[in-house]
Image 1 (tube, each protein chain N blue to C red):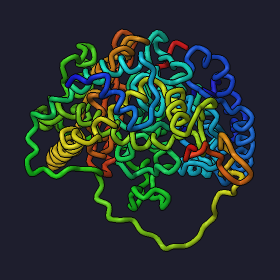
Image 2: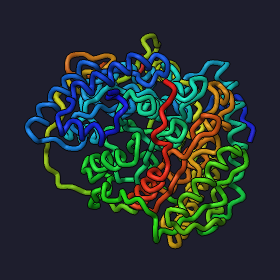
Image 3: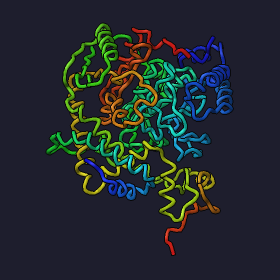
Image 4: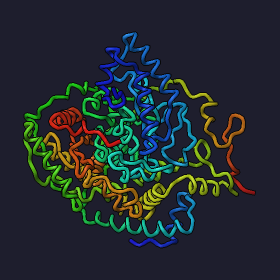
Length: 485
Length: 96
């Protein structure tokens, strides 16, 4: 049996019945990484010894009858979440040698549940990008077509799962960075409500937008990981102090009684015809499953979301990234004549082109004379976008859109044109602006390239989204298709 | 919105970001193009619309002032590019 191809729930069943061990499962994943990672480059760091040691501990825990559904299951963690004793680079020269002395809360939660950590996944530098080409180390490649990007910024996390290197992974999503690559790689990616998952130990990009979430092979696995990572954390002052449901109870295979809106505003110019027809077929399927569907214009400010996002996110980033001064941790320019010179040289050599672009953009939007016209204006548009989502959710249980207007694009295709690159998040970033949850599920293929379906929910509407995603998934076999690797 | 080289240099100085001459020119072009795309926001009527800084309505989050475990000094200093004994070593702030 190809153990690395299993889902969490399949592997957990075998472990519970002692038909395999976590050590066997972990070796299968490490062998798979050795075999295919040179072709797709999902990992920045592989922790073979640590993973096998954790697998041994998990096997003892299973023998003692103390297992959770995640005990002994091998996972990859995006390289912007702090892992004690394992370097956390954000795919940046700035943090190439940074070894955190503590775990992010999500990493600690998964470790407590018995995770086997295979390694740290590649990403766009500091999570800024939509293709993983902005990694300072190397681009990751789409396992469905290695000439194409896997999406980003959680590209490595999605590739690791799609290529069966890891059973599941964690990503982070600031404007679509879980959902867009999940759609591009044909895996399930969930961005929870802002505050649902602790951000403690997540290296900050845009603090009012960032949220951690699971990337899995199916929706059942998604619910299992959500159960382990959602919940209040006193270490994150923006964490929501709300009870966490058992998300596996949402896995119901029908949609009777649900009202779903399909916002016309997401049928953007530039949407590929193949994506559009796959999307329409998926919506028909949701209707067959019992949902009441209404097509219409509900979100007129969607067309302003991209501009608002690319003012708000870089503004927050320019403040957050000011901490990289080469003093307490991270890269420090060795040759400098003065403190100011050291600071300038440290940032010049430590940051890549996209990070510099966003720092400069944010600094511009926040600077005297432009603050009202850009940053304040964007925050007001943010209010309007939130309000129209609120109005839509008074009528609908969820909104349905494509995850991205295109299939995965070619490596290099958008690298010289930042605006074109930004447009690939057009369907996902309004969700972060409003702080609401959304999920991407596999919804078919166009010429062998994946298409994702996005369901957007009201605040704390995770259960409804899981139900929609599960019912849709169970009525298709998209999630069972395997990459050519 | 067309940026000048001087404006790009001024922004870089505000954030103490070192840039080569090539980077200044490339950023001048790219930022100008991006900012032009953002002018669409001026079409939106935001009269009497309050700004949103954060999507969840949280009040100040307070906790009791109780001490808890902290990282050991060695752990804190373990990533320091330059250190001296129990301190981070920095370049002179005041020059002679």
